[in-house]
Figure 1 (cartoon, rainbow, N blue to C red):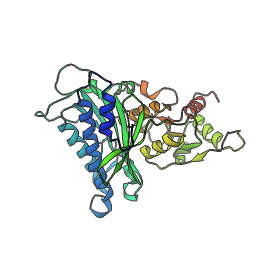
Figure 2: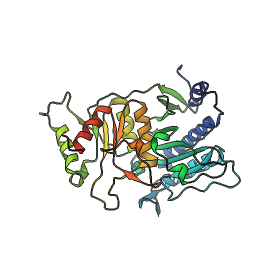
Figure 3: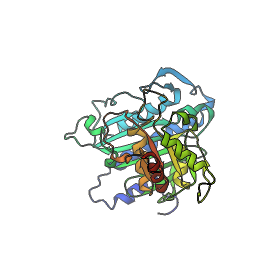
Figure 4: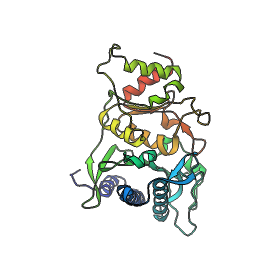
Length: 337
C-alpha cells in the first residue's frame, strides 16, 4: 500500500476482500485509535500536569495504581463501551468483567486490554504502551457477553496489537493477515503506514530478561542464560542483553531486530507460581502479533495460543520472539540441552 495510508484505510482495503464485512470491525478499531490518541496526549504532558505518581489504591494484581493507569483504563472503557460493537470488556486493572451500560448497543466483539503496560516506568519517561486483544463472541444473543466469550484460547483471536508511546507513537496490529505498523504523525493526527508486512528474523542475538531474578529460576533456565553468555559456546554471533522492563517495548524491539524476551516462572513470589505475565491481556495478543510476523511464543513447554484460559487474570511464563531462539530455549527448559 502507498506511503501515507492510514490505519482505517488499510483496514477498509483489506476488508474489501471479505464479502461479509459489515464495517463493525473498522468502527471498533477506530475507537481503539481514538483512545490511544487521548492516552498519548496525556502521556506527553504528564510532567506538566498532576498526572504522575500513585493514586493510593491497589489493583486486582496487588500492584499500586498510578494516575496515568487510571486515566488510560477509563478512556479505553469509555470509548469501547460507546462504539456499539462490543459485548464484553476485560482489563488488567479490573478484577471482573467490566459492566456494559444497559442503554448501549452491544456488538459481537470482546476486547481484552492492558491499558498502560510498563506503567512502573511512567515517572522516568521510559517507553510504555497499550496492548489489546479482540475476540468474537461465542454465546448466542445480542446482550452482554459472558465469561465464556472472554475465556477463549488465543488462537481464536480475530485481531491483536499494541500502541507504543516512545520517541514516536506507533501502532502495530494484525487481523490474521500479517503484521503492520503505523506511526502517529502529530501534524495531521493520523497513524500512517510505516512498517508494512513486518517479518521478524528467524534468529536474533538480543536476549531480554530480568537477570535480577536469576537465583529464583529453575536450573534449566539458568543453564540457558549461562550458555548464551558463554563466548566459547560456538554462537554464530555473541548475544547482547537488552532489557527495558516495559514488555511492549522489549517485544517491539525484538520483533523488528530479532531476538527473544523471557519472563520465566520463578519462586520469588509464592502468589505467582506460574509466572508473572497475564495470559489474556499480555501474552495472547503479543503472541498473535509475533506469530503472524514469523516468530513464536511459548511457556517453555506449550504454545501460548493453545492455552485454554481458566480465569481472566491467569498468569503464565512467557518466551517470545524469533522462532529459532524460542525453540532453543524450549530445548533447555525441557531438559534436552
